[in-house]
Amino acid sequence: MKFTTSAVVLPLLLGTVSVVALGARASAPAAEPFPPIVIASAVPSDIAPGGAQSASLQQAAAFAWQEFIALNWPAVPQNGAVGQREQPEPLCFFAAPACGAQQRVWETFRGKVEIFPGDASPPPGYVNNAAASYGYDALPQYRYGSLAGSVSPCTGTPPPRAAWINLDETDQITLDSMYAGTGPTSVAGNSDPQLVRFLAKANRVEYVYVARHPGWWAYDAPVGPPNLPGSTGQYVVQHGGDPPPNSDTYVSFPNGTIEVKAGWRVLGPGDDATRFHTNTVRYYEPSSPGAQTACYRETTFGLVSLHIIQKTPTAPYFVYATFEQADNIRNAAGTPIENDDGSPRTGVAVCPQDQQQPCPTTPLETLLDAATPAPGSSLPPQVVVEPSSAPYCTSALSVRPKNQLYYLDEPPAAPQQSGLPTGGFVCVNERANPIPSQIVAVNDNAQQAIAAYARQHGFDAGPWTHYKLVNVQYQPIDKASPGPYPGNDPNTGMNPSSYYLANIVVETDRPLQLFSGGLLGTNVNSDYASQFGGTPPPLTHKNTYYGGSGHDMGGCMGCHGSQGQTQGGDFSVIMARGPVGAPEIPHSAAIAAQVRHLLGATAPAPALRNRRIVPDIAPPVAH
Image (cartoon, rainbow, N blue to C red; front, side):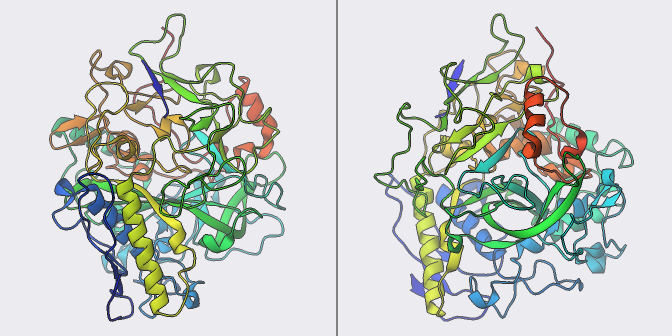
């Protein structure tokens, strides 16, 4: 089987409701109404009015925007006092320039290594006191076990301070690395300034749940709770869903658990910095030329993506919302191809001259997916360039694309089994699935509400009207047979754009942009249950369990099911993976090492990575 990628102003009270946007509905047939967008600092607890199971796509999108606004509210200044993290500043308006230097609420969440330290000992600042949230509010410290404690600053970097934006990931769960061609080509102290770097954080609810169970911070580690991951995963499959929330016997987070993943990068001369939220970040570099250990530096980056996932009373599988900065996808001339609300810009060429629509990437990528490997091949499903003679986006790894987003796939530990096209850079021309018009309409409403709120209080909205919701997943969906998702309902999640929810700078390559089924040892995904030791075709591999049965879910929810829920970590990937051994340094810091990897030399040392891909089954053997 062959799959081709294809306002009303209200009286103001500081920190509370201010502006409600009542804009036009989406133009798609039979579009459902959605709630107004409220500028408020309180994070919503569930989708209104009736919960996730009865919600429309528009209602779920409004919920996602309410999360975004509340979590990007200026936070109270932090000094480590109990109760201070993730508290909105009552004396600040949303987007107020006077509070621009303060952290955002989500930026004060705990980083993953603050919950799961690399040495598997209690988290930094931990106290055995529930009233003090087990030390949640301590100022950030990052303890990576394989590096014998905290990482030191690089030469010339000031002494350590409280670093809230800790970018200790440089790839997508070891599948690929993403770059922005508009970034600078050379920056002192940054070995790869076009690289998009990432962090993952979790809120107080998640931290307290982990910290109140001694040893759970060492989850999936030799000193962690015996068989807790396995017993939790078995419960999920046997019962067709998670244990009750807040369980002490199995891993099942309380309602209100929130995790975020954010992408950041250096801004270049082709970027308008006023359109980006910026902050001081900590990022990691080789401690010496060619070294595989890390030191850190600090400078200003721009926010390019933000994932928000929340467990709610009606969505125990979490609600998944993903936002992007508006200018992420550009054509070869450097022109953004989408408007701020996510609608396509008119008159902007997308495809290169030698490609026709659809052209998500250069070269075009195709998934060859079958129940058994193709004749003469020892590989299960793999991604190939089409046609096979198609050149990569540039002539060599030493030549970087200009203006566009691009990525470099990584082979697995056994390069000869790679199912990905790892011979060069792949340029991103457009989304594999466009942002639905229903989401565009909600984006327009939210951006108008933010702009009106700012005008009411005498300032410009700054960068916040230049972020857009890409999509939201709020119900698990089962794909009954392998192949492209066939649904076409524009007002629910039962359409390809929603089913394959993906952020263009977070889920970057073909296996992530169009994820469903599970991930194999070749780094490629497949729908076929037979590839995972299950029932022969045409049945699909189930990655998400809810309501007493399994679902072959796509996109973010399916990936979190595959890498979180069925691995015994609820839908939290950071819980399922446990202690963070080391911060990542750029894989391309030494391109020669990457080339040697591509040619079949040994895989990068573990110090290059802090996260691992967990295949649903053991890496496949030759047939």
